[in-house]
Length: 335
Image (cartoon, rainbow, N blue to C red; front, side, top):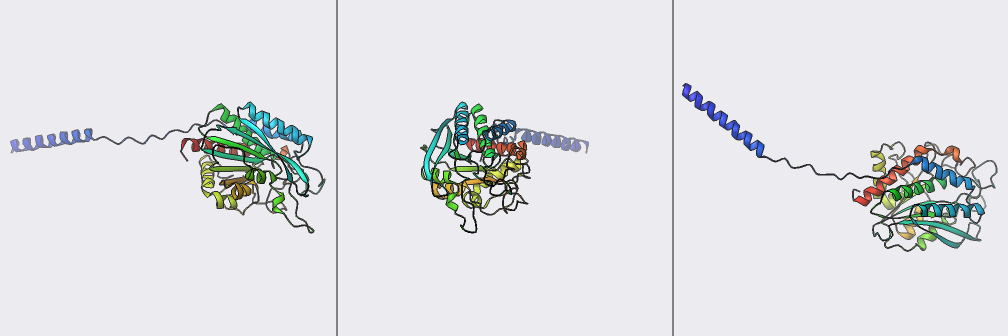
């Protein structure tokens, strides 16, 4: 009996050793290596100063000295970042059916890349304060409505100049977006009097090695408490790009700003880029829960309150950070 128990014990021991060897010889598949996407830091303080500099020129209404001086500064600043920069000048029909000279500003990096992205904003400011109760015939400073989108894109350009990106990028700053005719009892709203610079560019695009496969428009992105729902035309024409941007904002902790809600279609520069240029383009635009009497935009819209007092570094930083992450992830193929 002892011998039998000994034999059984030896057999059990051998079995354990065999199982141990088999377990040791099994190889665990390596975890897939996920490349870490490194992107430059978006400096919100720098973006704030870019807004301030524009406002310091005064209202940027086409065919004024302030408009011309600011255009030269924007162009030279992009050039200082190493971007190829040009003016696209044209004579167009204005809201009053009179000839108006406009100037789009175009900055390009990596012009030979076939994979291209369009980034845009408008840089002009409203010629009248038609939503104000005072000084309605005077132009506004447009710190947010015009200034903030330009500032974010300038800071994006500066950041990219410090860390190369494997992507072609065309930044287009449209003129005469905000010179449209206000609706009145005697004359109805005319859509084509707005976004004149983007209408012109969409019909007369500057030379590119290939058409951008996606576009992102920024408009009124710098105010305190900014709120960016999914704008209707963006979802209609470029729902996949909307998802990219809003998912990135969620990952970065900005879901309180980039809210998961749909909004009505807005007439903005992206309307003409989508319809005429056929570039899928979204609009990141502040559409508050409690808009002013105009029914859509913030209380400061087209008033003299649109000054530096409403600009918030946090809002500028959130939009800029999301944008940079989306760009570098697209360049790496991660999106």
